[in-house]
Length: 158
Image 1 (cartoon, one colour):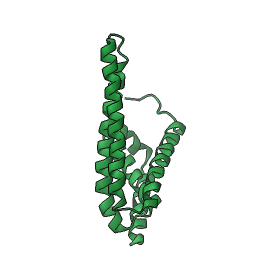
Image 2 (image 1 turned 135 degrees about the vertical axis):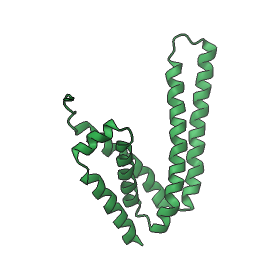
Image 3 (image 1 turned 90 degrees about the vertical axis):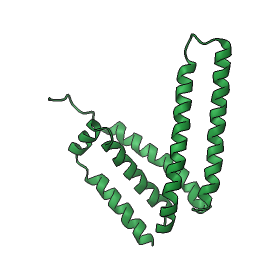
Image 4 (image 1 turned 180 degrees about the vertical axis):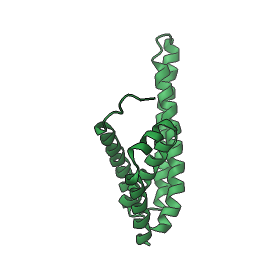
């Protein structure tokens, strides 16, 4: 079963590495191409890091996608709230309400983390759950490092 996991990881990593600069440029122009490439790289990275069996992967990815979708929505709501809180026209009462909403959103994020920590333990070992959160951080660091070292595209010759 682990062979299938390694095969999947290898295929996804190979597909990512095989992409050419022209495809990367196309991904920037066509909205979703770049995101799909990044998602595929993340799947390969996490699958490899966690050494998921085929059975675990089948149960893990729908759960993980559900979790990250909910987490993304909470993060978006927090960003919007914080952006709006910088409005100098807010009264003290409105600003206080904004802080209360921010605290509630952070509590919702903590509750979500706790809920999915429990759900993930039904699919993964406790060690794999710990590795998951580390793998997410490492993947983000790697992406940021690669973006920072990529040369910026020259002017378009259209």
